[in-house]
Image 1 (cartoon, rainbow, N blue to C red):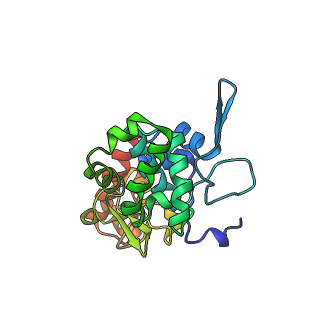
Image 2: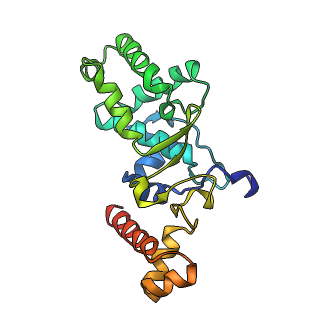
Length: 225
């Protein structure tokens, strides 16, 4: 992949993804690269959007959204093996290589998981979906703040729309930006630390409120990483 082909996809290392998603980078790498435990090989959950042919793992924006949903299911007690099987099954019904983060999976996924559970007799999964609202609650929470175009996620507001910070693969390679100016929050926050809020505001032609929001955002995500 060259730089031109990366436009509109977003580019993140596991460390950057970890900072945004609050999920350990080692887990992200394991899910997207596969791993071995006790001599048994566990394949990756899905193929990452980006391959720079350097042996490292990179994520696209869609990978971020897929990981959010997969992580939510794992937290609820669904095994990685079961999630991998659900992805394989969902791809048959959803015209998307990363089905967990699509709007269509919000309705079809419940039946897909239950069908797999019936085959494998997984009690944890059966318990999870005894009440039908459990599935929707998990998916809706994992995709909170996400906007869609068609069935696929297109941009993500990691705090809220009111905070005017967005993660959009069409802008700045998917790095968090101030929506009004398009300047990455990391740049505004760094400028504020070295120059002060007022000067950073003037130099980058943004409001002081935008600079303060960027500082707060970067500080909070640094603490969570």
